[in-house]
Length: 206
Image 1 (cartoon, helix red, strand yellow):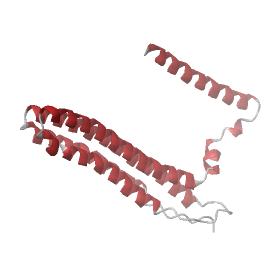
Image 2 (tube, rainbow, N blue to C red):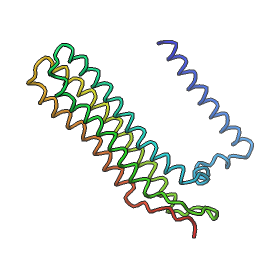
Image 3 (cartoon, rainbow, N blue to C red):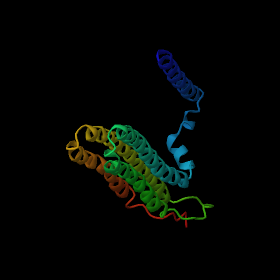
Image 4 (cartoon, one colour):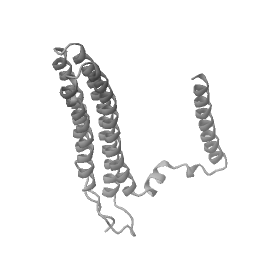
């Protein structure tokens, strides 16, 4: 494990040194204006940002749901070997994890409705860039919230299965905690709607 930490530190230091060297080279040779983050962002198509946001929204949500199902499902199956009665009742944890993926699919459909084909020969308007950026950050917010939500529900569902195998009276108490954990994904959905609420469809320069 120590060698991996050293390798990671060396890789980060090398990347930082290369970035500093490139910046100093451009600055000292009189070409510092090439290091223009704003110009770089404007040269990128807003379609790219929007599609990245949609991909992150559904991709991270599905990863969170799958991760949660893996954590909770392994504990349910393992506990059911000794206590078969917990298998059916604890499937609600799997359902909660699957809802996280459904949140991501719903928001991806909502976000994709704002993308329309336009003639970009004359460039994109400021509204197009706003829409692209808002879809990116909205999708990222939804995806990360659902990823954390899937992990929270999976870990709580795993503990619920183990606790239920030991004492069935503990199941309902831990289920309440699991319900509160699943609300995190709903918060992410609301944040995504707020971020993209004022984004308009792509129009291009008229």
